[in-house]
Amino acid sequence: MNCGQGSRGDSDSWRRVYTERHQLDREFRFAAGTWQDWIGVIEWVSGLDRTDSYGYFLSETNGLPAGRQPGRRTALFRYDFVEEAIEGPVVASEIADISSLVRDWRNNAVIGAVWDDGRRQVEFFDPDFAELQVQIEGFFPGSSVHLINWDRALRRVLIYIGAGRTARACYLIARSTGDVQPLGAARPGIPDAAVAPIEVVRYESRDGLDLFGYLTLPPGRDASSLPMVLMPHGGPETRDSYGFDEWVQLLASLVHAVFQPQFRGSGGFGTEFAEMGYTRWGQEMRHDLDEGVDHLVA
Image 1: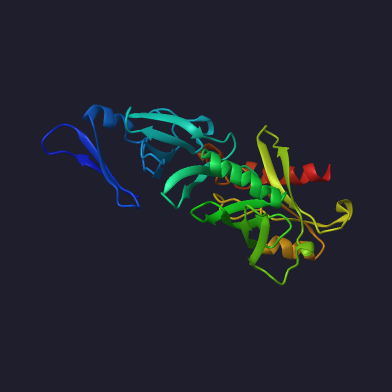
Image 2: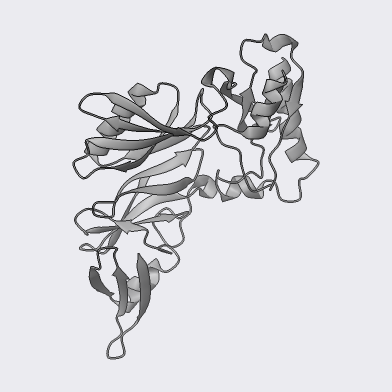
């Protein structure tokens, strides 16, 4: 979607023009004062609903120009073009930023939102896709299921499995028969039985922050007697995700436990959480790592 804004030469109103994938051009005019109120709130319209009545956007605000959500996490809002009002948050997480939107290729409508609060989460506000997600997850319990594409009738679905006891793979699902056809694996030389399981471990920092990390254990081994590798991510404003990681799986194959803590300063959990790491290298950030290890040992 391409968006633009500007003032009309013959009035005091503002105009916003956007062009959709299907080449629909529409123009919305707002009184100058009203539109100015929304500057800083609507930074970018990410997509429309099926009726073109709403524009969806991601923002840290609570829907008001001066408002901020606790933790300043990114949430999904929508703008009602008829009422000229912001609604929402439509989707928000108490832990993580809303990271991306899901669109239906058939009409480019926004149909859902994605975030990662330890494991990938998706919320569909289109009932057909909400039902589809539940059905597909039933074929792959415990796995992170990504809907990649679908046919026009929504009868055949291409999916990607990025986490669970697999080294990443794609499948084609026939919904009517339940037939699951493997299309290809990212690492065909690694059998599913050799993939080490991942566990989300939640713990508390010494100053009361709720934190978590990913613990990967070699298959079939007693965890109490294993050497452990503490593997913090780089950045620091990046993060790890629940899924197949080549380095982690290599260490697990060498009979090591691997722990990946998501310490303060990590990205994806709101601006405030990221800023907690500023100038705190070797101090609270380091404490978060140590306390994660202490939690596992206890």
